[in-house]
Length: 201
Image 1: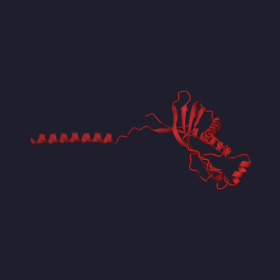
Image 2 (image 1 turned 90 degrees about the vertical axis):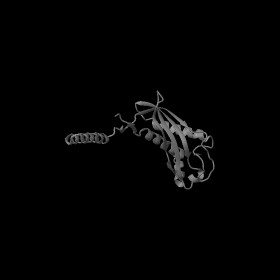
Image 3 (image 1 turned 135 degrees about the vertical axis):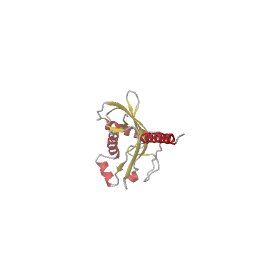
Image 4 (image 1 turned 60 degrees about the vertical axis):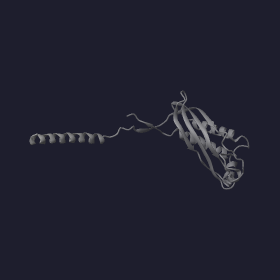
């Protein structure tokens, strides 16, 4: 092949390779299309609340400072603690959601994980913390579809002790009253939390 033709062929090959490299670089640097997220404010109207206190949660009636158990409760006379907590939380949650005037009817499922209040010994000396945990799921009242997947809620409340606890009892605001009012506010706040949803591409 004449020298001139060989040079032309080499030049053409170099131009072709350069063009390929340019296209690949442009593709590699293109931004990835990923979905975005935004927060929306829920508008719930609670039509039903179900509170489950599993029977396998351990109960303690020991009058020590900190019994090792899932359920410690002294705000009612001795009895079925599972049933007492079911009633207490159901009433508190009904109170907390009663003022909601949203547009979407929903059902709220609650499963208690821990309800560790104070014993008499702790309450009338050092005080402590009402340690309360529950799982909450929100479902559409008509279809049953899950709107808010199950999430763990920490509903702890500082507990009065010693003279402050005695005075609170005398004023008709014992630990059951304080806990009921606190739980009503907790459920109201949880149902007002913004929801994070994916936006369309």
